[in-house]
Image (cartoon, rainbow, N blue to C red):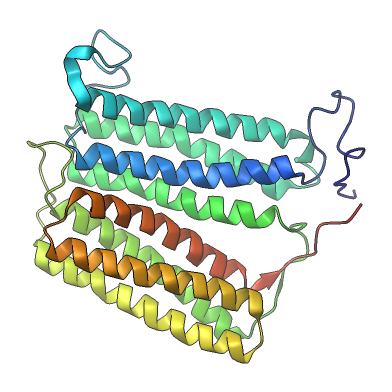
Length: 312
């Protein structure tokens, strides 16, 4: 079945409301998903950094009597409930994207099922978030709360990439050595994220003044976190040199972006550590983590080429 992108081809028996090909609206939905998945990480960070983790002291309601926050709960209630509300918005976006892609479910099953998977993360995150509240911000549950979001950011970046090609006939364009290095970059990114979560769990920002920490020595876990970060930077530089030698401009650009993000993350990470973990820098570091995850995903994917979108 051919994938049509023209206006005439994107209209059907449903009155022309849903596209049958990759249209600008489909691409916009993919970008919106990436931005929203990153935004939920930022608002979650704000909840934690402002000590608003128990701003809504129960779940699924905000209080035993009220679904929403009350004036008596103050700014912490507003921040916590705002984060929950954004999660609902993310779910609505996911459902809307699935509906938008309904007529592409056979011609572009990759896009359709990526949207389904990203939407499924929302209730999973709601449950984990609820457990973290009911356990009074157990540091291990809070850490687990970040992992699905990190995965969702990477998948969202991949989702965006797939809206720029047909998704068909993937084939390697780089050497086996460069592909291996790119996958090492992806693996190191996972290690960096896990150790970053553990480092945060050992630090002072528990989400509430009375919440426990994970018990790791902050100096030791911070140094352990830095090791794969430096390995990631070194691997990126080597991969960039190979991409230039193999004359792969798209992969080279992806590696350039990743390297810039890594360096900025490194600067923010060291400054926040030596300045006592100020809230603004920690929040920026989490935003940078999302950017790094997305950039690393693009690097891995840029080693492969798919058929272009058909014209017309």
